[in-house]
Amino acid sequence: MNPDIEDWARRAMQRWPNVPHLYGWLSLDRRGRWLIRGEPITRPQIIETIAANYTVDARGCWYFQNGPQRGYLALDAAPLILSAPAAGDALDTHLGKPAGAVSRAALDEGGGLWLVTARGPGWLTDRDLDWALDRLSTTDGSGIDEAMAAALAQPSGAATALQLTLDGVAIAVERLDESEVAAEFGFVREPTASTP
Image (cartoon, rainbow, N blue to C red; front, side):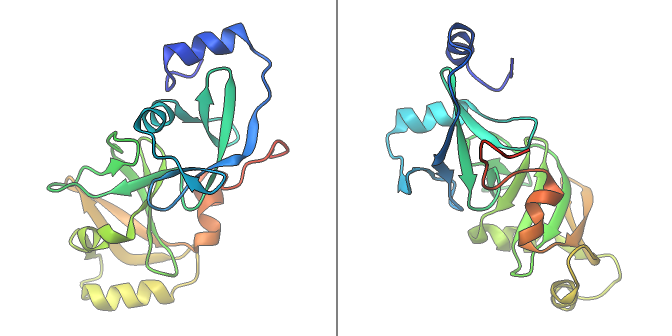
């Protein structure tokens, strides 16, 4: 049983083990809002329940364990939407939980920042890019503006001269097209029943 889900959901799964999974109804947008059929879910109890029972299967498909049923989510960006703290380096997730240590960083063609965290793959909200810029440095002694322009000009998959330093740990920043992030970071954006 997955440790990321609540006891009531585990009990329901044991009681009704063959409930079909739900695809195409739920999604997560780039602001960290849960949507049902394209409309934001606003009821706090439902939001809290989804956040408490949100996890991933072996395929890299993220879902909400709703009692005995898995509700798979389409992802506008990544499974986790990351936001910067008011102070310090510890990123938060849209789940209201810390992201944990960052092990990988990538810059997409539009300047978006994608991170692999201890909790899973995430996208840093565009409103927090200034926070990230304050933590970027270069490995070759060039200026940040020059290194950023050079990084954005690199092809997808290339190393850059940028590094992101969080809690004293420097993480190399690679250049990666947004269309390649899901495969590289190990998640599925549009899960279906036939997703391998």
